[in-house]
Image (cartoon, rainbow, N blue to C red; front, side, top):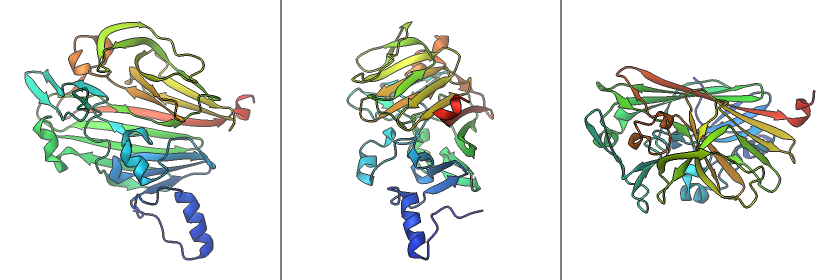
Length: 324
């Protein structure tokens, strides 16, 4: 198996190249670089196996932190954090199959639990090559999780570069003796300039949210403006069946397609006009454990020994190629 840390260059020329390659992520001492002829990705196993950077050539696709201080201030808004379960759960509590669940209230202002157990907890490397990586999280290594979520589970992540595409896969295994509620999402943060760039997503209906950003259960026809300049979003949607979000960055002549598997039935789209946008694919919508009787919520559970599998790809093409 290859080393999991950056190599140590021995000449001034190599040191310069290494500095450029690592840009501003050198303070992640376990950073792993994947590379092929077109793309370069950087994954941080100690921070939830977050893919913190993805470049085509020298063009950054994701919102990478400029320094440690910025990252620590709002970790969830950099790279591709894993959400298990995704988004908010009202009062951090719900019931399923006669079991009461009590999750940490890590959004105290709104008295919600938000974004689950694994987004910044360490993963272990299972396998690695020049252009692919598999990392694993085991809840048994973190017994505090079972205090309010009484299940043993593993989360296994794959990253693979192929041509101009990055493929992500996730497998969540229920290793406990009882059915386990299981919702999953990726809080993917793409570089996005609302004054020039174009965003589209395959949304169908928009969930009405209350003042705690929780769905009321009501939905209406979705509409995302063609321009997001001066438009703030923290909104929830059902998918229309296409399972895709797209970004056109005309200044770099780049088209980004974010294609997700059919298990993702909902989106949350977050945009605060600060140079990035987060299309977040979810297998269940925000607060789905409190919407168990609504099929649109995507609420589901995994039987003992079974696996929830999802997949997504980030395809990065030059606009010139589109016209050929």
